[in-house]
Image (cartoon, rainbow over all chains, first blue to last red; front, side, top):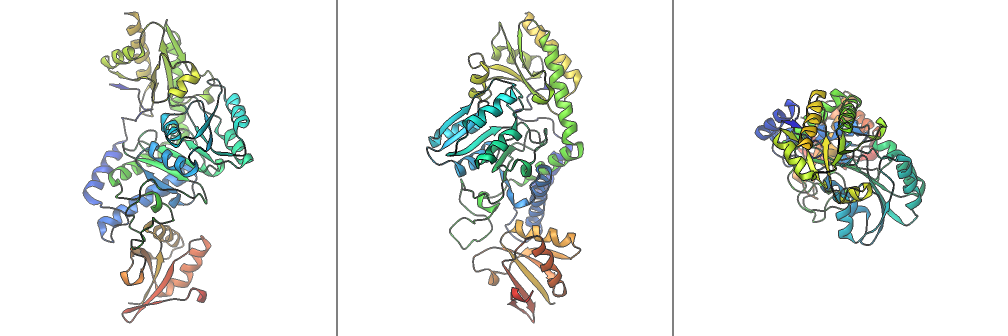
Length: 375
Length: 86
């Protein structure tokens, strides 16, 4: 199978990930729950994982690296910390339901910084225009999960700093793929999955917390600290990590993070961008296909979308699957992004890449798209 | 054997302390805190040799790491160390 659905989950992982998970299952119990070797092994792996994530994303204090179940969990923690019911929030036009649904549940007053696809300057300008002094938070993804559009994060962060508004970054499609610097952005929170560009297993996610950021837990329970007290600890990461940790997941995530650091984010980024551009170029030559990809390399990550003019996107996705090419069709849990790009009615077929894909796979998939649409 | 225990608010904090001390060449280990030392419940300590306490605290304060309390173990019992002595 050719796997082009890494924007959902990277399927091909480094060998070290499965090995680390198996070892954790056999040898680790739970961090902070005892002083015996199995607990301390778990604690050491968890700490190492926090530390290496901190180094990758420029978070000096490993305590501010919080483990979550996934990026959605991390985003919920961030959003429910910063946005009170009915609070004013500014988001980009390319956000995922992981952002918009919690905001809807809070009854937040949401302003969309609307801008055309692949027009980074227009996005930055829209944010500058929409942010006001009573904005509770700005939320923006680094890369659109539908179109691979790299949003102008630094400019948006600068606009937030100017107005003193906290920024939440959804790095679901960029963590491990594009450089991301928590310190430089001065973001309140950065949320990310462990199972995409960081090559960890499903069920892992991370919330990076800004300095002096107060946080509100979603869950209360045991933390292995201050056990005689009935209030949750007021310090990180314990405040946000009630209950037993996913140690096989964290061990696998650490192995994935080490793979990314060893390969180098820049190198992974170059590869994914190359594959995306090659795919876009080949698909532009297929009659009856509309390709959503930027000509500007810097505005495109390893994700792109297409719309067949005379076929249903789900039918094309299914046919490609039958031919051994795994893609994702539909709305990709991001109706707002489709609305912004004008593809809400049709949806798109998304092709997304990882460090394990090759140009040969891209050429074969492009040929199969052509064959499918010829029928 | 005489030693000192530096009480940390959590296992992660104790590990940060351990990491800073190891980088400075000070041998130490992270252990569960004896129950008698933790009235607020479970906690972890960084254990250092008694002769390493002063340099250890210099390293920790230099890294903005704050011990909750410090205990000296001698003759089978713990005694809190006044931090203003360091």
